[in-house]
Structures are given as C-alpha cells and as structure tokens.
Length: 113
Image (cartoon, rainbow, N blue to C red; front, side, top):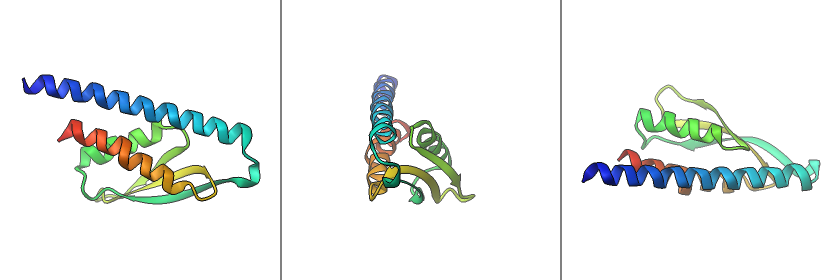
C-alpha cells in the first residue's frame, strides 16, 4: 500500500508543478505585455537549501529553472544555497521565493520523504 501513496503524492506533485508553471507563465506574460519597462527588475536572490538532500537540492534547482521568470543560476558545492535569477516588478522577488517555498519545495518534500 505504500507504493499507492507514493504514486498519489507523485500525481499531486505534478499537479502542483503545473499550477506553479501556469501561474508563472501568466505572471511573466503580464509583466512583458503590460508593465512599463522601467518597472521591471531582474535580481539574483539567495535561497537556503541546507535542509535538503543532494538529490532534492538538484531537483528543486531544475524545477526552478523550468518555471518561467526564474533561473537557478548556481548551486554551491555543499548544496546549502541556490542563487536564483528572478524577473519581477519592484519589490516582488520575495513573492517568487514564497511561491518556491510554499509550492515547489513543499510538494517535492512530500514525494521524496
């Protein structure tokens, strides 16, 4: 029965990723089409991943890169931190980080742990 739970959690993870992917696409399309160029920012933020295993850190970095508007620029050798390039409007980089924390990371941890 344990495998059935894993399969269910995998489907839940896929659904969460697709939801985050769709939201990121719509958000980036809005920024590109309707926000003035002077209000668009790109910045690199650090995200702590010291509580993740090596596999989880690499998987999260790949998921971040697949999501439009964010790129995992680097993962340090000890897998303690990811540098993420975020395209956003003024003051919304924390919003992108909260989407990663509450969406992708939480769903990934449900599947891997």
